Image: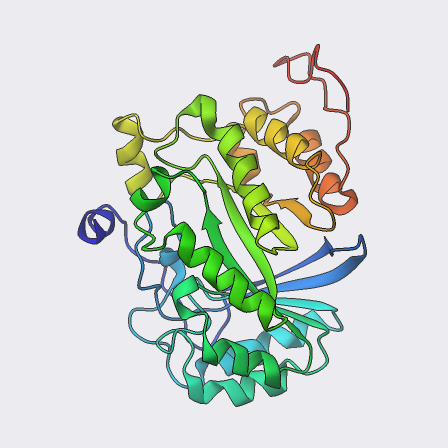
Length: 316
């Protein structure tokens, strides 16, 4: 499966090991309802060792291990434009505790640079959640949160994603994090391959609920984006369909009505515009979803006379 996924990829984007890919400034609603200033730093590092059929993050990774000292240099550059923030997210398109992606000898420098942040989020595959993770959390000035891709709880789809992770793996990592008082953020896919179109909404909501039961206090729904090669091949075989903006709205509306106690459900807004078939209403619809991210409340859907979106639907 790895060879098949990789054979369908196009060339990587050329990246420097000394400069971050980008920095995004945003606001984020935290468990309990507080909205804080957040920054996401996209670090250029080693490619993830797992070749998931849905992933497109490999495009911006380096060829080979992350060079020693490169990630602290990138973070230093990013901090120059971040300013004072409560939350910083470090996403390196791999696992933060994979020694190939983040050299252990860089940890001391990273910890010094992260001083003053109340919350630090990193991403990690369940296989790399272990002693190194907990040691990093103990030495961190602020509170650590580990973001893990649950993807789906669908019993047939999950093993076919080539993530090399079982539901038991996710549950075990979640339990270990909870016992060590490390926060858990979960990623859930909407438009997951190998799930029928008419079942996408149901399985996404089931996955959100499972993540919350496992202790995730922030759950991000990520509409699957095409363009990585493998997804297009699966689409030809009828195993995947591009996500529509209509489905995205309905799923997020429903997710915000789930009884999840203090867990925050968010929607990844990245590239949502490409999911719309109507240029007249897309900006307003995406803005509505962004407002819902901050409020945690479903708002009235945007009605569009051009495409019929929101016409005749019940209002929240």
